Image (cartoon, rainbow, N blue to C red; front, side):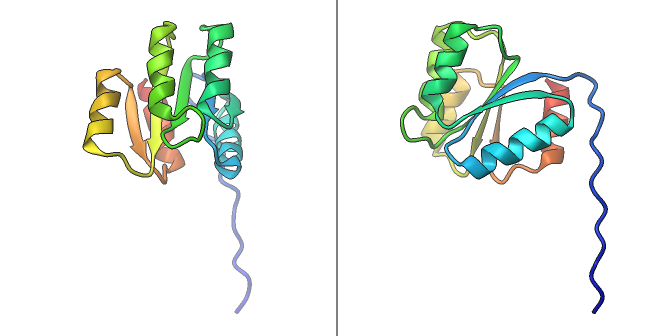
Length: 134
């Protein structure tokens, strides 16, 4: 059987580009998100946990337009991060990624007024669409 040729996926041209901070404890997902989002023209910073994300926002609350966070992280999980972002007055949008959430945790995110909760695996097209809707 001859090898299958694949064509590279061209980047999309978003209506607007964003400064995005992505917190996830999985290095592979951070790299994938960084490449995918940067390909669309967004400026992306990644961190391995909620604590360094919070430190970056505390240092400059206006440095990022959007924070995307995983829910399950070791030191400071997504819910704790979102709560603290609200306490420090982060003015941007917040998106949560999770492989699963209990109804109680989902309600807690809604109470904190996150802009979206997406369940892993998150397909790039879904994220692109959401970013443009924000």
